[in-house]
Length: 156
Picture (tube, helix red, strand yellow):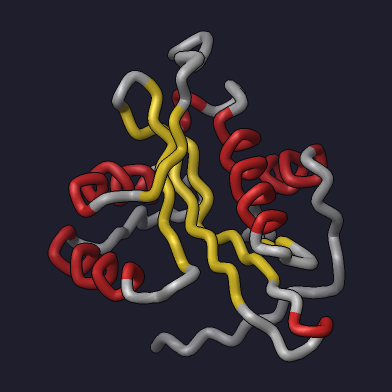
């Protein structure tokens, strides 16, 4: 396990060539017993579709040219809040061997900065109820529990 991350952690928009590494990160999520992820071909199709959205980006964090984290950031326009946009972070993952080294913090600070630059009035995220360590991580970054998150499963 690395004791520190290369001082040159780079956070950048993901590229098609990064998809295999991103899928491998998603397979590492501890609460997903099946660890099922998309196949590469399906991921490539979705990646191209995501790239067509003007304010939706998939990012990777890399250290020594190894992808060690990923997240998606959507900045969306709103008619409410006097037209101020809002940000939504999704699919945050840091490779288990690199957790606790500040990568997640740097990724979230990056997302917060992008949202500030876009004039967002808030940055929101949701986290699986089982991920208690993640909840503490987000609270330590200044995120507050706010309201309730509701969902309806539409899969069979």
